[in-house]
Length: 95
Image (cartoon, rainbow, N blue to C red; front, side):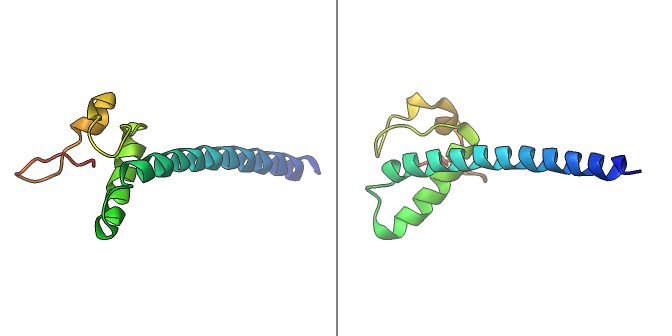
């Protein structure tokens, strides 16, 4: 009778280990994006910097890359370059 609680404890432990490793991978990705977007949005004015960081972060999470430098270089990351805003006027979404 003692085996079922042990089995449940082992399964729970394995699930916790799996969840912890997944969270570490997610944290690493967001750290990558925040550092790259910090460079990308570094020249933006104080008001625009928040919006730039937010949209750059979304684009980075989707594309897993951010072009180098504060401007241009979008050909380094085609996914980033090709993301467009919604609505009738399609404009580049990513800064």
